[in-house]
Length: 483
Ligand code: NAD
Image (cartoon, rainbow, N blue to C red):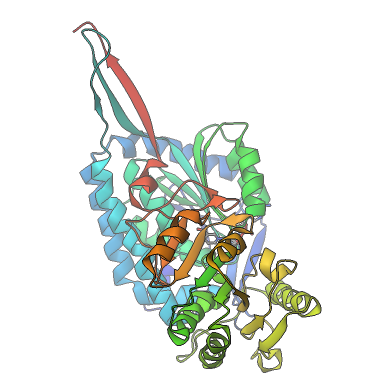
């Protein structure tokens, strides 16, 4: 791996400010999905080492929470500066382990760093309340206190930003963190640890543990001293972790799967809407919880929309994310390619039309060429499952009530897109859509100041914004009597 600072490429866990081998000698290869070659190896920690990480965080908590908010802010801002200064190396690491095109990786570093800066400042505003007293001779109020050690379990599709969105909020609130990144993309997490150390974040405040996922997660859930669990990943694993956290009654935040509808009203310019839909579907090769999976287009503009969609989609270049000019990198591994192919086959066997998508053009075994299906119906997997691949499905509808029912016809409720300029339609959809986030006439919707999260089986809690830091704060009520 060619980096201008090779020390950012770490192949050890990071616990209590030290780079750590696995005591049991177990390790795992990390594969570049674009080439199938091993980028390096990571150790799997043993149970006593994982308990050791909790010991370290527990000890660090005393010192970290005792710092003034502006002192924590300074350290987090130093971390932010280092993320920016090392953006190119961080982007290279990300593209090599995740596969996304280099410009997208640069964008993710920028996006991930922006949470560090925002929460660094927000940590200074974790105000309590003064409550007008209903008790004679008493003063009432609340204090905001850090909840304690937070375990952060993150996915491979956004290897850096899914960590900083959680860790910056937790650390600004005064909580030490134990990060368990996805085994597919650990090197971004470890580079974050290297830079946290250089930024003067004290030992034990930011830890990265590596290991067998179910083993690590079970141990962190069982640990009484871990007070909060924040998970981003699939709904299947999220449910499991919620169950496992019940024994120790943890504060649980879950950012789970999505199956976003993309509604196009009859008043829209079909070309403008089609271009926006392509942008909302194919980011990160469709491996995005916000990907526009179910594209619902008014019947009056359906055919024009499809034509423009195909024209735009066909211009996308698929290849190794390290090559300039590439729009879509590989999928994360071979199983993801198999799953995408089975979803397309299922749709065709149930009557959908394959309008575009030619898998024979794939540049390698982990690549999946963009697909457009029309005539998608609710009995197909492509409607019901998060496909996490560059597979787009279009369905025609005839009126607003019908499309609202279609959009809500899923167990997921993360994000929805609406494209129309009719203000009455906008308001009606905004109120009726059962989603945590609704984006109207915009593909871009996320960022540090806004609450990110879903309803239904898409999760619990919110990340980002003022609600994001609340996930790591306890409200302590006080009644000061005898005044
Ligand atoms: P995943 O659930 O397989 O893995 C997520 C994390 O959980 C990884 O760290 C993994 O190692 C760990 N894990 C896997 N199996 C486990 C088990 N049995 N017990 C405990 N931990 C386990 O998800 P993924 O495939 O890495 O990511 C894709 C999913 O993440 C998609 O469903 C996507 O929608 C979701 N996602 C959601 C958001 C959001 O903010 N809502 C953002 C990004 C991704």
